[in-house]
Image (cartoon, rainbow, N blue to C red; front, side, top):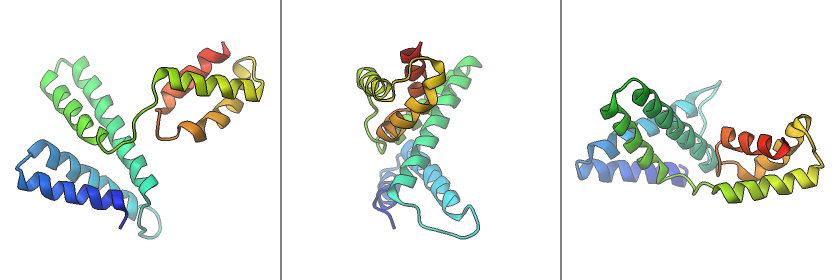
Length: 150
């Protein structure tokens, strides 16, 4: 079992003991998503820590999007719950890059690739993606690259 998945299971047990409903339900849903990912495909497999992190990031993104949708619908209680679940999941994710750090990485990639216009976005993204994978959301990275090439 991967160390991150084991950590999630230990934290679930602790949350249940402490009767922390928010934390226990969030971790339980996340572990279900991890298990679902493990059995997807032709045969069952054990996810690596990197793959578990991707599942965690996807679940956190779902929470952010759901909170935004609930806000737009005027359902603030549900939006607050989604945000709280996102905070719980955020505790397992690596620290996200700041805007300044992301801009610096993109500027270095633009200089390295020699891209000058929007047609060079693919080349820049190819250089930036491995450096920011898991540390910045794809849409955010794309927006910074687009701004740098404009």
